[in-house]
Image 1 (cartoon, rainbow, N blue to C red):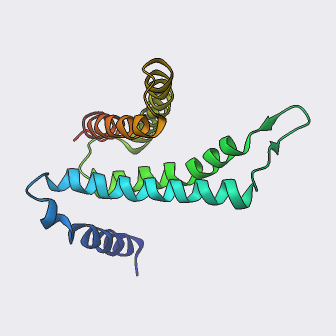
Image 2 (spheres, rainbow, N blue to C red):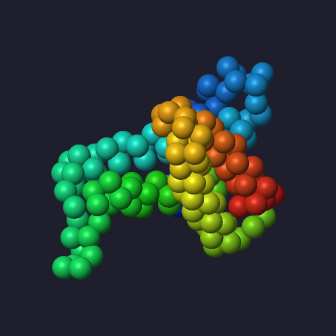
Image 3 (tube, rainbow, N blue to C red):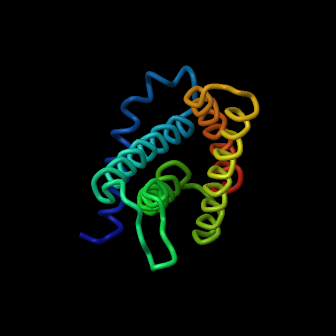
Length: 165
């Protein structure tokens, strides 16, 4: 079977699984937004799972010594492991399932997607510092609020910048 046919069957199968739940959300959002939330949410859950497994079992909560002078804490190393899987997977899924009509070249999309991911990391850090250390909010509700803000910002950036159609 040619690769194009396999790709189309896989894409169709994944979208049919995602889209089966869309009628429940149709009154609240369009199909593209729903697919964005489904794909992004699934990728986020995978990220959390990979982080947990990496931190607790692969790294065994131990510092990673790259050289005699360079070490990485286990929570940062676990982040790097999970990010190395979910970043390319997220890009591929967003490009092919959520925003397939983009007119921008693939490598430009990848650079833009990476830029948005880096912005999200910086915003998470800065807003957590602001909410918890300056506003004295509780960390977990702060993280929940920040995640909501970043989801909205990411969707807008991905739709109108990274995968512009």
